[in-house]
Every structure is written in structure tokens, then in C-alpha cells.
Image (cartoon, rainbow, N blue to C red; front, side, top):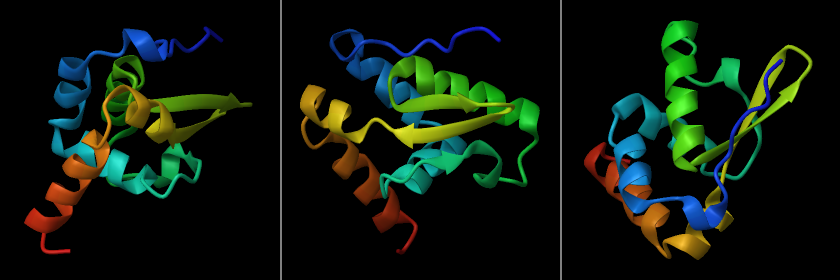
Length: 105
């Protein structure tokens, strides 16, 4: 299987992160990973077709928002919270808190 590309922290661009998080499904993925736990990709948004999710995971990974790890035939996801916090202090908290506020949580 091909190696998954994860951008180095210094190459992550704010516009790419915001564009990735600008889609409701990708924002839901980030929220699902906000606790810091690694999650199996199949348990996040199980009602969305796998082909669509693959595209969303790729966009999040290539923008630097998530890290994907292969384990056999499965993919596991984590939010690159610490790296994003060092690159864009407070950004994730602001974005994820705004979503929680607007959804009534």
C-alpha cells in the first residue's frame, strides 16, 4: 500500500486548515477526534458512504488536520491538536467551540 502523506508542521497553511474544516462532515470528524483518542475510521460518520469518507479523510490529512495510521486493512485517525496548536495557537478551540455553540451543545 502507498505511504500516506502528512505535511510537516511548518508546511501547514492556515487557508488549507480552514478550507478542510469548512465542510460539515470534515468538521464533524474533527469534533469526533477532539478528545485526542485515536479512532478507527469506520466508526466515524458510519452513515456516510465509505467512498465519500475517503475523500474527506484525505483532505483533512493533506491539510494537516489529522494523522492517519494504517494497521493491516484498517485506518486509524487522530487529530493533530498539539501540532496545530503550536502552528496556529487557539485555532482549533475557536473553531470547535463555535460549532458546539451553534449546534446548541
